[in-house]
Length: 197
Image 1 (tube, helix red, strand yellow):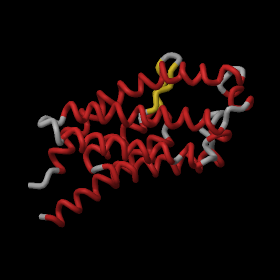
Image 2 (cartoon, rainbow, N blue to C red):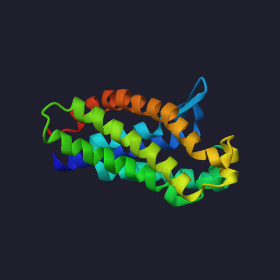
Image 3 (cartoon, one colour):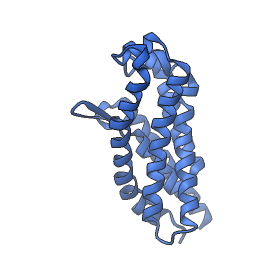
């Protein structure tokens, strides 16, 4: 039984890694344009992994996403900002790993005090999405408060912080809501299947 559960665990992890790779390379899977916004969905896959398989596996899937982002910054930049900031693995890889760790830890912690898993799933999804947005924007601002980066966002360098606040208020919150809705919906049936018999 333990071997069966281990095989199932590895199968789910492999599928989620494959999904994150596809999302990164297929624009409409990884980024959904909605009006002026471009919502990333990759963080949702990391959060689902963290909820279903735990924080370590969430960090692995997040790390895969981060490494792909880092490599693509040199070879196939996904945006004008990518070759300026995502060549730094602290910006491209670390936040993605932290999504899985934070979402997984929050879920484990909350399930210890709440019997039903839905609220912990929603709150861990919010925590994971916020981790991504805050760390990526915060690290870009910390390391790359430069005219070149400001120009890529279409603002003066003195207005870069305001631009990041605007991004957080639009994309960041929208991605948080997206994660809070989709991650629990997908994670719930996966957790039922993953639970040891």
